[in-house]
Image 1 (cartoon, rainbow, N blue to C red):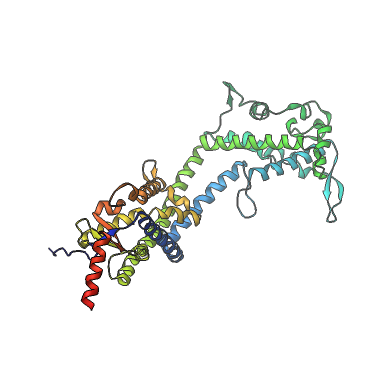
Image 2 (cartoon, one colour):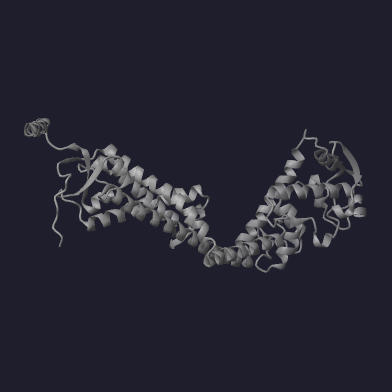
Length: 422
């Protein structure tokens, strides 16, 4: 066994709380910054490897299947870029068709805005209304889900509310029980315009004449009274949300797709996490080696800046075993910086990787971060000003500029040195 060597810092004072904390913070954020830089380099290389490309392709395929299923339900439709439109945008589209349908049934015109900002009145074509291809509910996405999609999927085919089954009366189920709609806004079933021009569509998609005129004002850009538009908009959004909840909680095909997507997402996140922690490990090792070459001893950048050195608990030079253990503990504690890095890179979803049961990477990093904060402030509560890493390894952090002993002893040593020189 290699003999212990008395440390050159044997007579130096233990580092102050302030210097101890500053050196730790410098190391923590220094490693974080360099990890951030190297991660971007390693990530650019990693995403081109066959393994990561395969994981990304599988995730995209699963996402496309989910999007397609939701689009097929008509609860949300996709745009020209194959992205799901928002619920609000869907409601705006629905209300425009509702207004045009009502105008068509009552034989009213619809305003069309010109390039100069003026409006011209045009007759509404049946192809712009819910009457067009009414059995397929081409434009009425709300009815399509509750009348067609829900009915055709065994795991969703349930129309029971408050113990009453409305399977044979879906109109009452949708508009009166689910939407709790104000029926006075709409024409009655015996309305002659509805009978003559409605071609069998539900009365709940045709407003009364006066309400149609009120809604038409909105499309003339008259915003003096938005109460009707707001009420109808809310009806639609809230009912769509109920449909989405129905799918999420009850649809067997959707749950299967979610399970497959979740597995693909976890695997893709795992690949990103591996790249990040390779970057972190590379930076940490490089950090230690470079500081060893610069400082000629086992110290960190923060300790170098703060003019600190290390001894063991017996005032000897720390053994290589203590140094390795010291750096391993710091490696673990400083890894919590990945939480900050992933957040700023918009990759916080990576922390959803499961570890044991509901305990995932996020909880692990929060636990480590909590330990790190406790470790940072430990010097305030013990005489040797140990943090967690120095306490575990039996290491003391000494101040190279401060010495133990009274002022008289130090002066005597200085005088003796001066006498020798003379």
